[in-house]
Length: 325
Image (tube, rainbow, N blue to C red; front, side, top):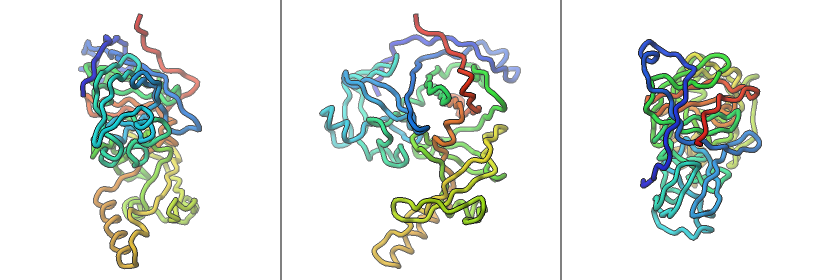
């Protein structure tokens, strides 16, 4: 990636006082970029950018490994390429780059935007290839996106006045997904943080066999069938915990297992379903989407491999960093 950095980092004093080492450290947070995002109906947030001189919007997609444009936008901008395209000029706030190469849709592993490559409501997705160069601060209460230098005191990141407890959990990058350990009804499981997904979900086999959920009861009523006609359920959990922070009464959509109902005959359908269930149980996880994340303020400390989570108080704006003169 050939991104040019045309801005200086701006120091910002943290309100967080960690361990003795962090208190003795003299490297405050340094702001690199700040953007006002847009959203509607509580769904995914989009980032304003300029691509080859045109205004575009990229969906913030923490579950996408790469930044990319959708097929319609590629066509409208007359960008062609089998595996990748070259963006002559790209700018996002203070970030500016020339002749950057992005993959075309479908080349991004498990994809973003709910598993569909360059999905979401915008012109494409903003993925981890840019995010992980910085620490990423996402204030969903105010739809603010900030980028900080990773060169700061360990643990010294909470510059805003957070209501209640603060969660700090380790980050793992798993096949292009940002995953963190969470507790659900007292059990630990990996969670994919998917800012391009409107809803939070879990697969049926994982809900039943890993988390011990009994479907069809008072806390798991029948939901709307999915687009293939498979039955779904709405599970009201006791809560989801990020370390010491617990979000109460989170609802997860229990989705049909992978490959459910696929195959031209009963034997093929059964084998496909068994294979999908085994894959889920070998790698059990839940997906946390914007119906839950909209209630949080997230700081992805990629330099520390940690995610800091607080609840969002929409009446209390984050302490605004200094602006560039």
